Amino acid sequence: MKKTLPLVLAAALSLSLVGCSGTAAQPTASQSEPSAGVVETQAPASITITSLNGAKEEVELEVPYNPQRIAILDMAALDILDALGVGDRVVGTADTSLDYLQSYITEDIANLGTIKEADLEAVMAAEPDVIFIGGRLATSYDALREIAPVVYLATDTDLGVVESVRKNASTIASLFGLESKVEELMAGFDRRIETLQTFADGKTAIVGMVTSGSYNVLGNDGRCSIIGREIGFENIGINANLDTSTHGNEASFEFIVDKAPDYLFVMDRDAAIGTEGAKLAQDVMENELVMGTDAYKNGHVVYLAHPAVWYTAEGGITALDQMLQDLESALLG
Image (cartoon, rainbow, N blue to C red; front, top):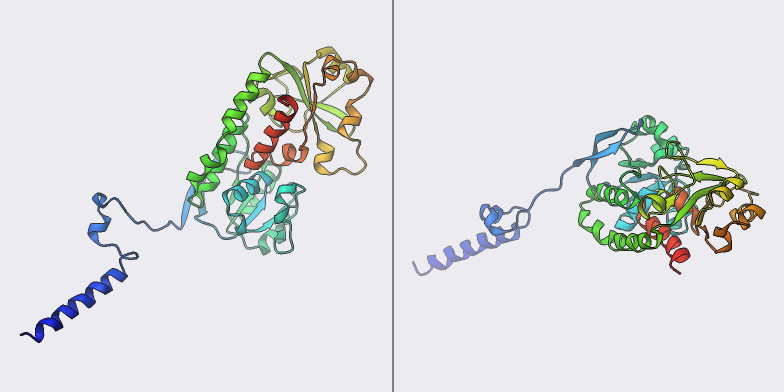
């Protein structure tokens, strides 16, 4: 009996060690109970998110969870993926002139065309798990979804740019289980908006873009809507019933003189898209009529310093930061 007991104890100890080595992968019943405080779950193969379809309608979309191969045809989505720290999953992207996203324009990452025209063969060859697009490619939605699930997110002007960024970033983050990181990335934006709101209170403005030598006024229904809708300048440049969400409506310089805004905001579309031979926005705007306005005389003509960000990446986290920087530098000094 004295010799047998040590053998029994040794066997029991051996079984105990084997059980301990498998604890992380195979939790015991007691470890899985709520009272233990820790419940280990297996990551899902896919999740369902709310996205848009080719008709720009909200749909429920099943996408792979934690995708390893991502195709990008929307700069706001690439901006968010970059901010979340999962940019290493990008296997192909549309071309972009944005300085802060140039690390994705390399020989190692496939060129998938542009944000307006996808190279379908290149997208297919990249073998993505998921594809991200923006509104310019809505008409290609059906063709692209034959390759992989297509996530199409957009800025909702009724919701506002800041809340749209927060919502879309949370949707993208949910693909990787990174939802908790979104609030960290969005910290400070609301306070910055409030500071700009205080400045804008009671002030009028015309907001627009220079394109092909003309000035097109923009309303609060599309590009640059953050200036009137969220920051609170009274946008007196456009009839609220007119659609200005794409390229605005061309206005004469006499129109600007007649409206006499306190501030004039100018986004240079030609510079944003690299139009060869185009006149700079400043050369277009600084004519005899505009230079006679109080807005010009008071130094209140604001040329948005990062036009490519405003025009091609509105809806991104870093883009939002740069857009607010443009306004803060011009308005708050």
